[in-house]
Structure formats: C-alpha cells, structure tokens
Length: 276
Image (cartoon, rainbow, N blue to C red; front, side, top):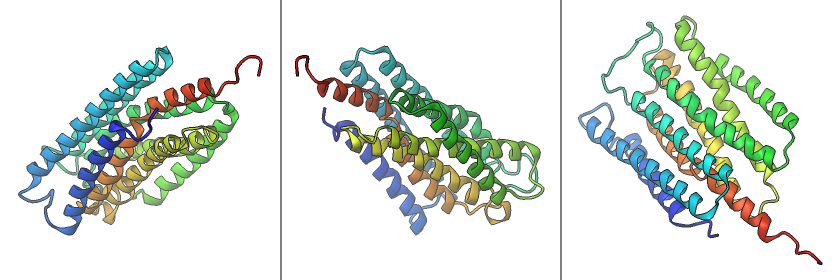
C-alpha cells in the first residue's frame, strides 16, 4: 500500500491553507478581531469541512482494504472523535462575542465550554492509540507508567499557568483537561515505541506526531490564550499559533485507522510460509 497517497496529500493541503491563514494573521495582513472576522471564520469552517470529508474518505478506504470489524470500528471512532472536536471548534469561534462568562479573571473563559466536546473527542483518540499499542504487544503496566508520568506533567503544567481567583468551573474544567491532553501527547510516544519495528514507520511517526501536536496545540491555548497575559490572553496571536498546530494534529490523527490496516497487512505479507 502506498503511504503518501491522495489522503495524505489532502491532509497536507488542508494544513498548508490553515498555516497560511495563521501566518497572515500573525503578520498583520488580516485579523480575527477586525472587519475580516467572518471571512476568516468562513475559511476556517471550510477547512473543518474539508478535514471531516477527508476523514470520511479514509473510513471508506479502510472498508475497501479491510474486512476486519476492529479496523472498521476504529475508523468510525475516528470520525466521531473528529466530529466532537469540530463541535469544540465552533464553540471556540465565540460567535456571540461574550467574555468573562464565569468570573472577572479569565477573559476567554468560553474556551472552557469547548472542553465539553474536545475532552470526549480526544479521549476516543487516546483509547484508539492505547488499544493499538496493547494489541501490538505493549504491556498494560508500561502504559500505566507512562500514564502516571503524563498525569504528573499535566498537573504541573496546570499549576504553572493557573491564576488565583479563577472561578471553580473554569479551574476544574481546564485542570482536568490539562491532564487528559497530556495523556494524549504521551500516547503518541507509547504508540511510537509499540510500532518501532513496523514496516510502515513513516505512518507510525506521522500519527504519533499528530498525538503530540494535539497536546502542544492545547498547551498553547492554556498557557497563552486562557491564562496568559494575566487572564486577558495573548489574543489573537495565541489563536493563530494554536490553529496551525491543531489542524496539523488532526490532519495526521485521522489516519490512525489506516495505521492498524497497514500493520496488519504488513504482518500477513511478511509471515513465513509453511515449510520454510
């Protein structure tokens, strides 16, 4: 099977468009806070639609190349996970332009509301990654060990950025999510270790990078968009940086079901024949 095909090329094009939008914003050619706001949101919506369409096309690819129920279930879980994350993106658009919903410390606290969608979405990606690692021989205790390390790092990250006086709701939501998204990032390393002997190392690397980028993207949100600048947030700069990282991560993550198919196919084709 060809690794760099139309699905990866489509992912690359989607990420390039998102990155151009982000770089243009950082350079001051347009601004989400200016008259171009709805034009930018339209472009971002189109990017999300294209991303979802590519994810659905990948599901169809899985159906064509594998009849295993597990592979097909993973493909559908990836679609559901992405759909949940896209719902979170819509919340982050902050269409009603409301701020300080839960107190007077954090301006962009509407971002906490998006966790309602991002948390289950990334929990599904995390579940897939851990399942693939275990099915490829990784012992559960290894995953538990990585999990403990990730939890400690997530807690430390949250403590380092949290502002005194932040409302209980925002604190609990962002604190819990900081731990979850750190686990997602750690799962990328677990997946990479589990598939270190895979014939499709490039595919493993790309999906693993997608998991790590997801953690990095949300790290930018927490440190610079929610709690940065004394609660005012470094907006819109943090939004632009996050957008490029986030779309990049999703463009890679949606290929996670293909990773299972590639590995299974490689295992079958390299299996020694009887009598040899």
